[in-house]
Image (cartoon, rainbow, N blue to C red):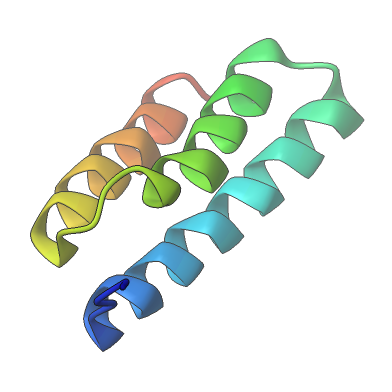
Amino acid sequence: MFDVEPMSLFLGLLFSGIGFVAYRYGRRMDSVPPIFLGLALMVYPWFVSSALWILVVGSALTALLWVFRE
């Protein structure tokens, strides 16, 4: 039914963990960009199945966390 690659599972967990930390940081500091980017990092691996695209999108969202830091 579902064919899950080990690399996509690992990358999904990695970027979801980064998203959780960013979300918690944004809530604690009352900063909107980390909240939304953290939520995006936690949710997008559910909709992307390719390990390459998980890596590309996760890297871009993590870079946006760095760009929109305060």
